[in-house]
Image (cartoon, rainbow over all chains, first blue to last red; front, top):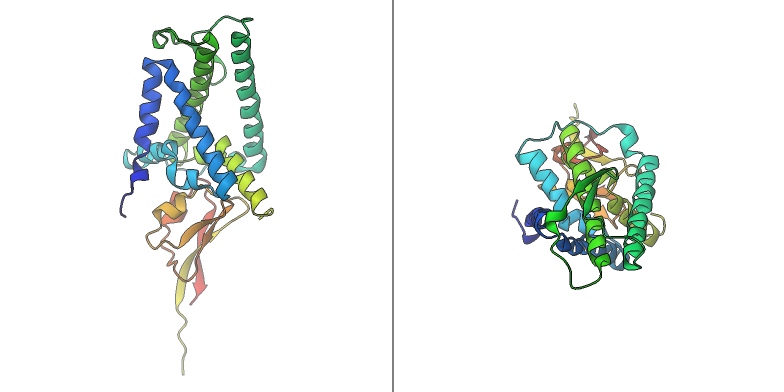
Length: 191
Length: 70
């Protein structure tokens, strides 16, 4: 099948994750990965981002498919159930707002900047080497650390399910995919 | 006279469980699968030959290849 420009967006995803190791402020670029799918679903009522432009999904497809890093087994039933998908979306939302709250506290001067990336909402990884100061408030950097934590956590989870199940298993419970599908459902009149 | 019935294969999507990721549409060599309004994948019965590529790719395993009377 003929390759199109958007079939190479996995390079963008890989570059984004790599940049976070050098300067955490690059994490802000990840806002694009959050805003574009929402805009596409809200304006056009499609999951065009998931269907074509998701670099993360492409990366999993490549690593699990061509590179053979996936067992290619069926995902467990509970993992594709609506309960789990919506539950994970709510959980992700709560953790995201908690991250925003921590950012606010740093902006307000109540809390000091924490130069760490939190993996899987639990493990605090020292990440000070990727922080070289900022012209703005330390809150800007705190958001970057928090946002990169979200991205690294979801990539790690995606990698784990890629290995265990089918390459793009992450797409089944991806909170952004669930949310955009809900938007599309609402826009199409409940289906 | 004996009438021969041709058995065809075709992909069927369990739309209730479909996450509309579009993995199926990406791999379909005949463009027989499309994601309908971001809600679920839809198979064009005229185009689908039941090759099974979509079923193999589907991360939620909601596509089945079934035999249909042609």
